[in-house]
Image (cartoon, rainbow, N blue to C red; front, side, top):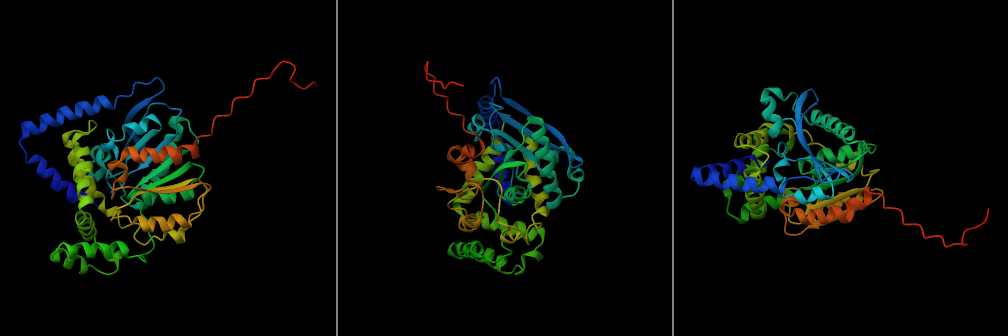
Length: 372
């Protein structure tokens, strides 16, 4: 979705004076690495490649206390690793054990096997990988269930996993939540056209209007073009991409300069997966969930409609559910305002998955016990 925008931002960075740019990067990365240090007695900080779905895929597990709930993130894109946001989300690891996974075709996993070593690049294959990753984490950490956190395109996987496997997940959290309805709601598209008209982008408007009315017929290139124009037509989304996404990638202590190119290549390489859910209908698939269900959406998200997410949420039946808008955010709301997102996790999600501690028994006074 954002590969072209990020590539443009990367080119601008690399055009700057190399010595000063790299020196600044080295300093900031060093500070970020120090801030990410986990040295608590019951903490965990491990990462590496695990054999998933027949190929080596990169998985990171971080948290300050293994007694905390485990959160498995499903990143968006497709191909947009969330591991780059580690420094921004460091506070999450005080309350949750965060598992981040580079799906096939994404960043470190792509770098490990190359484009020819990614195997089958389909929605169904990655969905099966997600189940395998879930079971790997459950075994590795010795937990029965994990919280499933779907970001953007990852939320498409997340809805289906949460519905199908309640024995594996203790709660579902969607952010930048994608909702599919077989194209019945075209409000996001109409708002996009309005933005193009308002800003005088007549050439771009003509290109979008020339696309086939049936999105199933769009090529991967057409999908990428549409996504790029939709994102760059909104100033808040574009600002977030440049400052939050590209800034996090550039200053991530976990990623080398070479891996910056893997991130961008992964976004383009993974575009072929995006067509998979184009005909999905989330209402038809079912609005009943056997686990707690939460959606935390950017209030100004122009890519994944908060109104559509709210409509679906209102129809959801779940043991516990909660919906919240994150102020002054478009897409990538969890990473633009990570502390607000953490507040929502602590207020709504953690109480739903952590059993309250039993109240202390009142002291028995001498002579107050009953005789047998």
